[in-house]
Amino acid sequence: QEAEEAYRKRTERSREAHAAAQKVMPGGDTRTIAFFKPYPLTVSRGSGPRIYDADGCEYLDFLNNYTAMIHGHAHPFILEKVQAAITLGTGYAAAIAEQRELAEILCGRIPGMDQVRFCNSGTEATMFALRAARAYTGRPAVIKMEGGYHGTHDAVEFSIAPGAERDSRQPGWTPIPDTKGVPESVARDVYVAPFNDPAAVEEILRQKGEEVAAILVEPVMGVAGVIPPLPGYLAELRRLADQYGVLLVFDEVQTLRLDLGGAQRKFGVTPDLTAIGKIIGGGFPVGAFGGRAEIMAQFDPNQSGCLSQSGTFNGNRATMAAGIASMTLLDERAIARLDLLGERLEAGMRAAIGRYAVPASVNRIGSMLNLHFTERPPVDYASTHSPYKELSKLVHLELLNRGVFTAPRGMWNLSTVMEETDIDQAVDAFADVMAKVSRHL
Ligand code: PLP
Image (cartoon, rainbow, N blue to C red):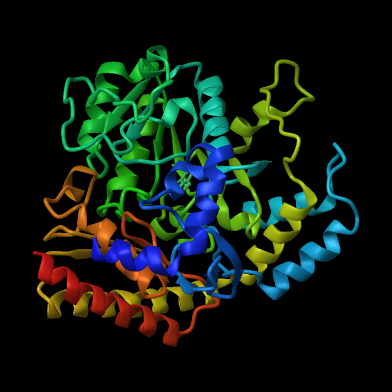
């Protein structure tokens, strides 16, 4: 109550903007995931690691548009490249050299990516990767992980946040729709397994292997709470995929930031197909999917019966220019520095949690981090449950009131333009919030 009152007081213009926007957009915005109560901020600008709301309040941005803004806001190098590019026009229904250049960078870095095609979102990237897998194997079904988020197309809108009650009918957990409007016929081709549980995947394959086209997995579950793979998990999925003639599809839309070649390079497990997005667009709308040349060859229109994949804005000039700039800035040194900042943030948060004896844990890998109100760091979706889960929302609001912007579910991530002082400032705010939270327990 108190946190909400303080929030309302400092964000009056956001409240007015939200009320006006609600007249023309349900919820006043176009992203379910970005909504929070009492109303989300209206942001007027961003610069470096900071954003500013309609009332002029400043926030250190630890959400970075859900990991997309790895170089912070209005990065001068990215802006310069985009500004130069768009003076040449922005779209022509024809290929541009910059598209090939970004494709070469990505295929050069990502072990499992011989070839790539662009689209406009991570949602499309996983959708087309699944189409490729289904066409290649001639099979309809997909195994996804409980808590796994792959965007908002029908086939993946299952068991993202199914709540504490789950249906454990075999084979495979019955997929639980996360939204209305997805036909039941889609659910028939989706099997769900817990993350970090290769035996569950094996059981599904043993019973239904001949139906399954793809195992779709985030190598580190992002939205579910930054949950890394246990040692050997990804390699075991690779082995099972090979054994059953199923394609292994990594959703690296978030995890590409963990290593020059994504989580697949970091963990040394190469998938057949990879979906990416976010950071490869330098802040512009983007997605891409790629993989083994013989699978990707299905999209080659030189061949009759090729797979369809189009999009008016695929490979557009602004995104390609920003993407090349973003990937150029993201070299080994930049990633190593992000990891160090991540360590500093984690240490600071853990110290604050300990100081105030809050029953919380921190999951971190590289520059991605999540606060959980669990005694032990979760290893799958089920272990994120906690009687204190709702406290995440309070922490989120209290952090906003102290000028720190994070995800309502407790996710933080870093940008290359952050300094140690920014981390320390956020840790101070976090410690203050933990002190307050400890009084609620
Ligand atoms: N896959 C993962 C792992 C994601 O985190 C997201 C977005 O957060 C998506 C796919 C969907 O990407 P987009 O929001 O660009 O459609």
